[in-house]
Length: 368
Image (cartoon, rainbow, N blue to C red; front, top):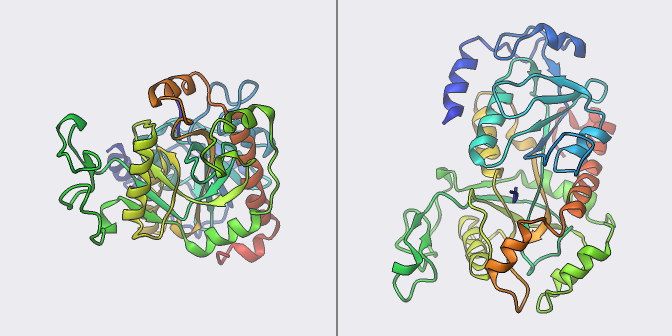
């Protein structure tokens, strides 16, 4: 999310209370009140879809919408479930069995939130689909603000070596380069995916979600049209919002500029073995995928049921004629594409959620 190792301790504490097997009979929604957070629960709530939001601007309803607000209101996530072991309480719809979680900004919070939820005995997540849906910076080479991208690869931008830009060798592209390489010019080797730098989303599930949504006509507006018109050298940046496939880079630093956008493209290309294409910049997705990998290892959740979708709220670099610092500081006062991105994120994500819920008998036992 582009907006202004608790997990291990939490995992040990929760596992020590003997989390029950998923075979337990689900109970009515009201039964969750009988189970305390972190305690055993004989009748876990069934969950078909988990909506993973990363932040909310202010309140959960009634003010400027961040990532969670539209999901909460339009999906009738009215049952509040205390979640003191993480950043934000959970919200649940007992009729549709959709659960909403807000992780908080950054990989530390996203990792711990998803791990805490996955180990929470109050929920049966054995067949749950997880939709990570957030706003992002978007590369003007690929799309315009308001566009929505389904990620095939989630790449980490924090695990790295770094030398201050004032001290790098003259022939280096930057002072930031992958671990186990000899510098930013040494990018031809085969990356090791075991270090947490890259995660591949289930290819068949991602392709299914993209095919289901690729023809959705997203609304345009004068505000985002005026913003994208500045990007005269970038044809895709000047298009109205659309749905595409494109990979996301997660980094705790809110970076910006043409040179760092070039770095992001190189970084995603390297870690995906040349198969990925950087489109969106975010903060939390590698944390989510890391937690889901560990939860999958112990049968608490299914990593192959995770989708990651990001909508462009701002560009990752300035338009021609504007310097990076000026554009970044202006964007920090309010993203030009915020309203469009959260609306389009909900529109596209809801198409997938509706399909899953509407044909649950088809999807509960096997992914598309």
